[in-house]
Amino acid sequence: SDGSLDMIKINYPNVDCFTLDKNYGFSGGYNRYLPQLNDDESEFLLFLNNDTEVDSDILNNMNAARKKFGNDHIFGGKIYYRYNPELIWYAGGKVNLKWGHISHRGIRKQDSREFSSPMQTDYITGCCLFTSVAVMKQLNGFDEQFNMYGEDVDLCLRAKKIGIQCFYWPQAKLWHHVSATLGGNYSIKKLSKKMMGLGRLLIKHYN
Image 1 (cartoon, rainbow, N blue to C red):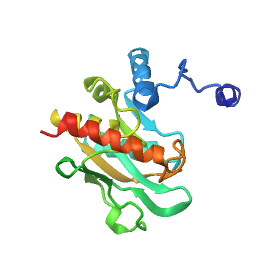
Image 2 (cartoon, one colour):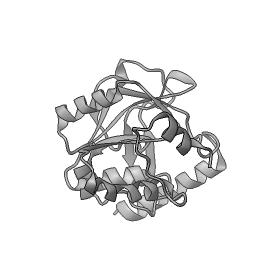
Image 3 (tube, rainbow, N blue to C red):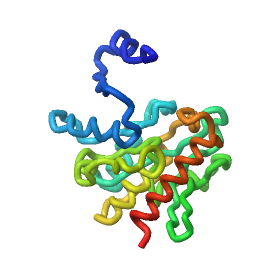
């Protein structure tokens, strides 16, 4: 309703837009696009939040990551805070369901050599997630019982069960307007959705 589709059609006529009749949330929105890939020549996908700004070389760097580790894995880059561009928001993900703990490695720390080496990680944030079409079809997309928070962790946990790994690739960089969709980093709405997502993860994955 903000005129963005018309703006894209006018200024970027070579960009194809896939429109929906309503907001289906993170998982539902992406899942409704995935069947379109049957008629597409794309082999890889970059899932990207709309409140991010990316380095101009991000796709080349994601390609470098999959060439090193293999096509059919899940990759993520180094994410900074938009208004504090040297402060890290994500440099890998940590999951400990036994203690109900899911967190970003490096969050709110200054960028340093500690966060500048590629590594295997527990999960890739859905804010910026690069993978192959084959992986998404093998996983049948995102689980729609998660509606913002938890769907990315669930995807990665399901992937690991069938041998698909997650890799942090710091050369791929972007900047995030954190939680712009939900009204800020500490909004009640955000915290509530995070707790619901964590509860669903525990029910589904913790034995």
